[in-house]
Length: 165
Image (cartoon, rainbow, N blue to C red):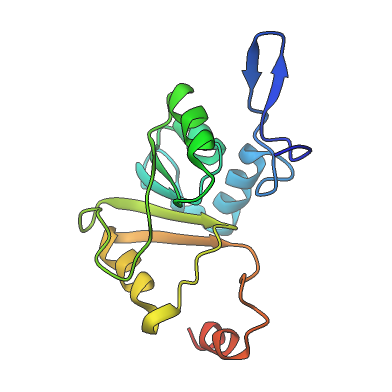
């Protein structure tokens, strides 16, 4: 995506500066900000396995790997296949998957952290079934980090649901 600082090309190599729409100041600064907000999160100690939903080129997962956190980066089934290919080629576990109303394909208590930054998922649809799935997949003491304005914030009913959570 042009102008979003996800990928740059230097001769015959691609570089991933860690910016883009999710991390304006870079992924490392974003991770530092999360750690300041939740000091007990301790990446690499308490948080060792993460799921990144709506991952783009998986900068979040790549930077977490530097902090000893293995991250599975998941992109929705639409136009993200090329981005997933970049993620895989840079060594970040990644896949394309759909978030449906059924049980998701990940095991229970598999992740210490589930991250969603601008992932455009309506977490409250169908009485919050996806939030229940997040809860099922998180280990005890795990974290669900959801960053960004609700994409459906102009829909009054959904905004009321979020305020009630």
